[in-house]
Image (cartoon, rainbow, N blue to C red):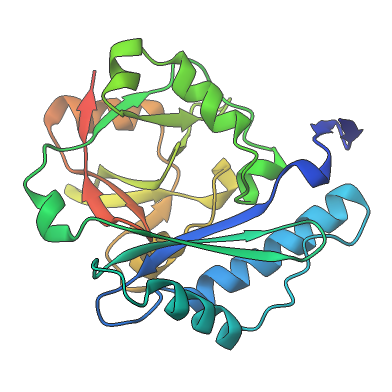
Amino acid sequence: MEIMEGEMLPDMTGFQVLETTIHTEQGAILLLDEHLERMRRSSETLSKKYNHRCFALTASKAEIQQKVQSLVEGSPSTTHRVRLLLSNTGGLEVQVTPEPTPATTAAATLPLLVLDSQPTDTDSVFVACKTTHRDIYNQAVRRSAPELQQRGAQVLLYNKSGEITETNIANIAVSVMVGGELVLVTPRLSSGLLAGTMRARMLNEGRVIEGVVTVEQFHEAAQNGWPVLCMNSVRGEFSVKVVV
């Protein structure tokens, strides 16, 4: 461990920059350009944080597409989860695993969501950059009730100012009353969260707006049964059941 700018940083050889998305039934890798751009931004951010050039992506988009295609060929599944793992030396590992189709998961009960029991320091570089170093998120999950952990409940984080940020696996949008109408609001990046690719798509399409969402507003939505949505590239947008 080394301390840079007040944050204790793990050895850069001990984690990888991570991007996760879906290879669709149509043969496309969902939001691949956006994921590769975020991976490059993570490389720049981490290089500045460690004061050393690291996590530089050298593989081209075409090379990644070819690798994914070679891994899914012959698979009986039509949809696959794609994980791109970038080492500090620039080596890229591509992992592909079958993913349940939307038709399979539609009949399942809504995923559970519980608010964290304490605020999180969201200024960490490991919030801004998606990596396999997930201590912040793992600690939040461990603070939740054991029975909720067993049921795979997501945990919603919030910062020291009482602003919600994201769950341990997804971005979020909460119904907030604005001008007498319910509007889905996703927390602004300055609250301390990952700049999700599906979140960005929904913002660009005008399906959500960006703003500060307080813990009190989240409680209000939960108590009134107003919609709360989560989103990521693997699952798209999905409703959750808030545990109060």
